[in-house]
Amino acid sequence: MLLFIDPYLETLINYRQQLAMCYLELVTGGKLHKSGSFFDREGRELFYIASDNFEHPALIGLHEEKFTSIVREYPQLQYQHGTSNGPIFYLLGCLRRFGKLGYVYIDRSPEQAKQGFDKVKSVLLSALAKEKKYDIKFDQAHNTCIYPIHS
Image (cartoon, rainbow, N blue to C red):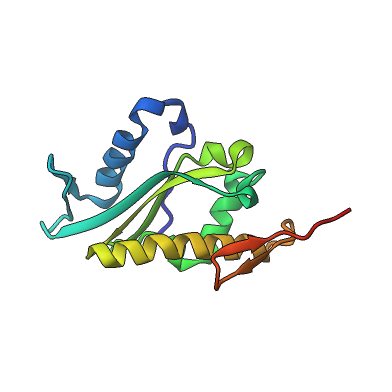
């Protein structure tokens, strides 16, 4: 299942993290406790890592529609309701101009959430590297993109 949050959320700078958490509740059916703990519909504790500042030069100029099509191709970039894990993306309106987006990754343990969060970065950058529009290569070992110099 693909989940995307309001691309104009970036206009609410002071509230974007709180709004992301509200969307998190709405999308997952879970509940965020005052302590910061997050629970799924059945009351099991879930763990999350969020960033509203994932930016990369490869994201600059990327249209929201193209981002959506990339996410559709990669299950690792999709939230899974059955297992209550995966990423939820927001701030998509910042992609084209600033090469930036936000996402929350949810999983059953802090370790799994961290692994999934990092995996989203590598899968997304690897997918962008495969796009013909971007003349870049993704180096899995160093988690970086390599840009050719054109003179």
